Length: 346
Image (cartoon, rainbow, N blue to C red; front, side, top):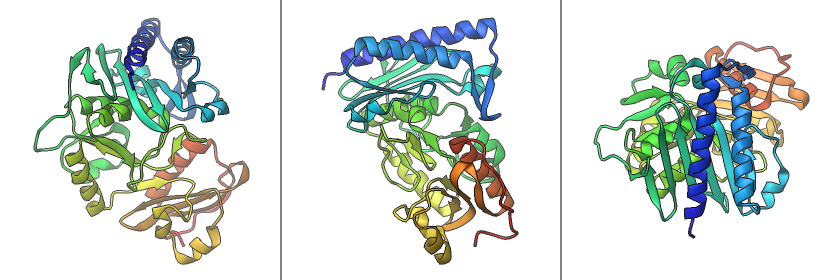
């Protein structure tokens, strides 16, 4: 497929949205919390989203659209081609004065990422690529590094709260996941992972850049990410990068038992095996089973019923707190009516 017109349009819109964000910063921005202090939104998010969506509708009226900051139109599910947009990936960084935020625009065809444009306004860096066209940084061809000692780009929030206590080598904390993926494609890092779930708009553009270069991004349980889902959230952490670094990191995470959440767990998911046999029998068919697991065992369990009512909340206090944050961010405010018993999940 010839994606040059699409790539040119995405690159232009990413830069225009970036200019809008810088103008907002110059005037001063006020953030509102969505689900907590780490999940923010500003007027700039919405205006940048509107700018990108209007540009894509004009250029490609037959395509579907999905943006974090716009009402989801279920009609996108009927489109083979869907644009997936995060107008500001790293809103917390944007509002705090950190340069570590980005505009991310991705195009998925048949559920697979084929094009990405990730723009960092603070440093004026545009990472852009598409299948058959390679990847560039500000118009110059780029690619994976060839270093032997891997640089592992991790979430600064996860590093501060948890990862700093682990001996995983090469960790480099930063903000925007879209920018992490773009910098891997530019050879500045080699691989990344998260413990908390992400959404399609966080990673679609950056995933495309990795895929163009022969890398990958997948779920922590090894299964592929398929875009344009009915509910565009990845129910677990992600892992991705250049192939050799990705294989190495998967082994390191397994060896250390570093945890990840899995929300909306079903018997078809590998993490179902971490539940006790009695829980597997009792919870089969329940749509609100959420677990944080590592090393082949459940560390915390939350079962969410209708209206956000917490039916069960069990596990190690630290991991239960981490899981509660992930569930709240995905589902909104919970009705924490269930007591937390001592000990691990039953």
